[in-house]
Length: 497
Image (cartoon, rainbow, N blue to C red; front, side, top):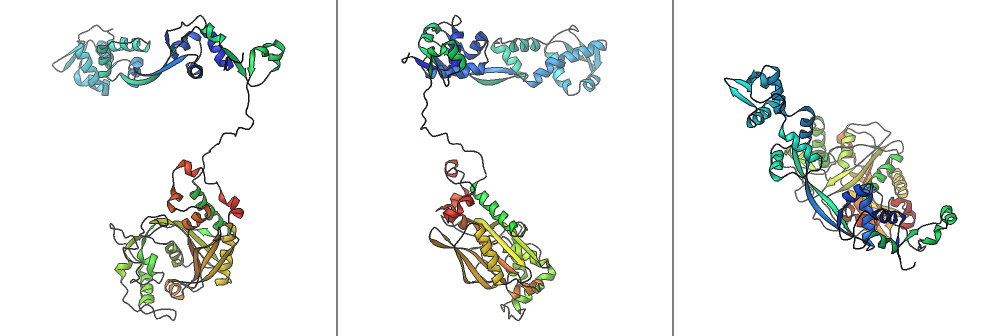
């Protein structure tokens, strides 16, 4: 028994059903076997493949072309062919009708009806009248052909050509499986033994257990790996940052990425001669090139740049409104914060924005021309740089960081300013900039209270947390690579950073 081939109970039963029904050396399609054995074709397809893998029979796959009846033909078979309807109509009206009257009654089918009825010699047209020539009970030959085709009969080429010309049938490719046996099913049954996964009471009581084989199991085998669908890991990270901000009481605001230079630079007290405001650093729109400035605010911003406000001397140059009106792709989400402050919200408030920003960069493992930033602004009782450092500490700790530090820095629109660093895998990484908005900026906006602000690039932080060396990996669509990235990294943040 040990030399026999192991088969399942279903495979064994199929071989038993073949006894007396098939002959060695002959070829059978699975559709023929399904009809012969009274089993579903899908079941036959799967079982013959299993038996073929064990060398008990041979299978061959072919692609064949067959013709199927179209929906239009099915409708004609139900409701009548257009030419049949025309003959019936003429018979009901005494054998003839004006052409226009027949057209009105038959509608869109009139042209098809006339063409085919005339070709078949059923009607004629004389002096604007359609006259019936054939017998009133004629039947379209296409109806008979379609009935033969649906019954499984193979039609000759000239008849198929007629049906195809009228779009009553369409070709369809079908994969068929052909099965053949070298030996009779009786001899094949002698070569096999049924293999079972577990003993049952019925097998023991009947004594059938002596004629079956128990399947062996490898208890050391690893279970199969499952890869369920999930969000892209970088999308998960972005959404997690959004959730943390909302937990800290910040309200999200959004603006389109196409922005005026006015909001991206001028309102933030960045002079128009700053090197960042050139095509080598900023993306400018070609069409349309300009937008409209808010008149009331534009004059205040002009004064801040030319003359100075809030005890500042300004930048001392002639401010150009046409330059401020140019349209760009925003280079930072602080432009969104500027728009929010221009509405003069009354404290207390906490707002944040999270979106894509654009800078002219050469793509390499560390840079992309398009990336994400998160920006936050807040004003309430006691707001100060010390208060801001406390909020940022809470934010970083909620991301799982235990080691972080701040140091003084410079930014055009905040004073005092700081940079934030975190320790990732033994190295200090700069991830954010923050500070109190400058008096010149707030005064130009008509804001008379202090505002704390901060922002950071998301991709750089994600690269460090996930241990990536190429920023392009954050946007990878390689399923094999994505399967190596843990889902919801923050569950393990305490052990990673």
